[in-house]
Length: 380
Image (tube, rainbow, N blue to C red; front, side, top):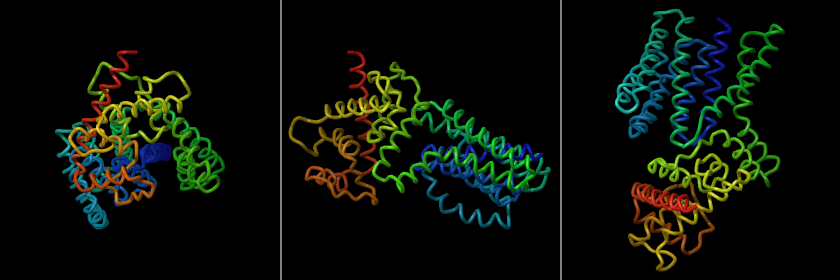
């Protein structure tokens, strides 16, 4: 059973880190990734509290997918549930069961995997079956859940997932086997085998974040440029073909490209890159950025440089937010480089435009930009 435990633990550890590395800013990937990592630790140290970690994290991920308005309450409740699980391990199954039921109508496949996980976790926590049976069963459910989350995120981003995930798995697996087998060959302790495999996988999956930290310390002057090049290289396997016949999907991809307007590395993965001329990846991303800017500028009314009438709302919603990088609702954003026009726009957003309204304007404006881009495709 040692080999099976090592396999499922390593697989869950890799998948958890892979989800976190996809985009550390996304709460969904954090909830799912922490669940994977918690399960990986539970395989090494089979304890009821560690089994509770994926159950509690899974609850948060399922709520984000089905009832996101409840996640702020769960973020507060998760700590008391975790503490209570020290004395009453099965209590973690209650929120999991509730979230699974809530997801039935919107995310039925997540509910199905949730039921499977709940049954396996219940069998482990209540001691109904041997750990040798329940832990691998939990591993199957956890890995399926992680893959579903990764695919869901990739679809939302308009990215391909198979090539990128397979590449990461192959490299991590090769490194884990290379270093883990040496510990086994020389008769190292079991715990050292698990930690060696975990470290080998982490170094591979987190190579880019680790390189970014080193660059900021060693070569701060070119750290941003090196990060952009790494991001572009990582984005290439994520690009999927562009289908221009589906107008709704084209508009969605345009909206996503606008959200990455200031990040050439991210734009490399956009299917809209197919609208540009053949060139190196970053050059094509710069072309796409220029095309988006041209379409945004076509939304600008002819009367002046800035206005607040209805005719200006779509232009303002895209230009100042994405092109100028003004974030009116972020308390962490402090800009000292704003000119008079930018300050007027910022003041208008903060005092006159609710955040939800701005989001709706951006969606509507993105559809107009998509129509403009499609017109360019038709005339080419």
